[in-house]
Amino acid sequence: MSEEKRPLVILTGPTAAGKTHLSIALANMLSGEIISADSMQVYRHMDIGSAKITPDEMDGIPHHLIDVLDPWEEFHVVRFQEMAKTAAEAICARNHIPIVVGGTGFYIQALLYDIDFTEETDEAYRGQLEKLADEKGNGYLHGLLAQADPESAGMIHENNRKRVIRALEFHHTTGQRLSEHNAQQRQRTSPYRFVYFVLTDDRQKLYDRIDRRVDKMMQNGLVDEVRRLREIGCRRDMVSMQGLGYKEILDFLDGKISLEEAVYRIKRDTRHFAKRQLTWFRRERDVVWIDRTAFDGDEEKILAYMKQVLEDGGIYRK
Image (cartoon, rainbow, N blue to C red; front, side, top):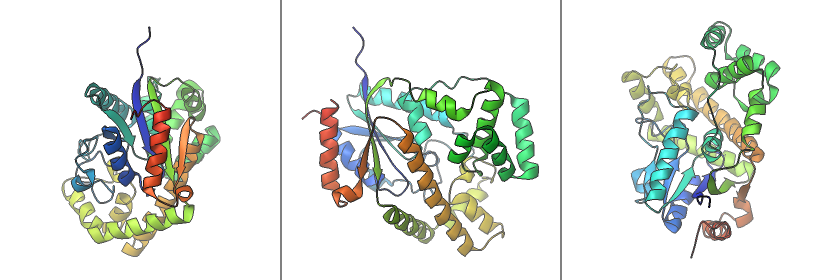
């Protein structure tokens, strides 16, 4: 007789959809613990720009993969997968439900389908690509990817140099497009008994919320936060400092752009990021979409609906 699959609940969606607040209510309902699937909230000292959940907002719910690394440490999908699997196993051992919350779709996919990342690498070729990017810019490198793997190029922003290089390296070493590989991986059977919620909202409401969030970040001291990060040794070539909000404020502090321009770019690029997130989630299978407009934005109604879906999925029992 095969071992029963462990339960897993996912709550994701574009940035500023309201995942954090809803996740606390969900965790209270399920006796759950939260695993963060956010590529920035994992870092200490990066609170304002990452819109990190505060201890008060946690409401006593245990959170994992938040404030566990320093900004100069590497964090990537393989490390997330390892840490999240360990956390999920420990949560289940306590007879609690692991709830994955965050907007990094690739991380969620890696955990959910236990994607195998053992692959051929070519460090010499990677070095050539790094040099090309330094000499000709990220846009040039992204153009190479658009020729080799147009679908991946459409999903990866040109400034995400690390992911652009990974996609080019994968194509170079395997002869296969990374987008095709990922599509095959998505067909894997999940080792979990899961429900995958995607929270969204009317696009204009989402964009307005993004603008208000960025304004609040500025009021809360994002410039000072980036200044302090620089003082403790954080450089713009670190993965952590490539995050939305951080690289733009670095440009301001370096005198490259005005503060007004930095804020404009953060808002614009965050809206573009939300759009790319939605594109990613539309490609995922077995997801349950929750559009706030269908519930008149009423979280009690949303929670009641989620409860019913979780009951039907055998994860929540009265």
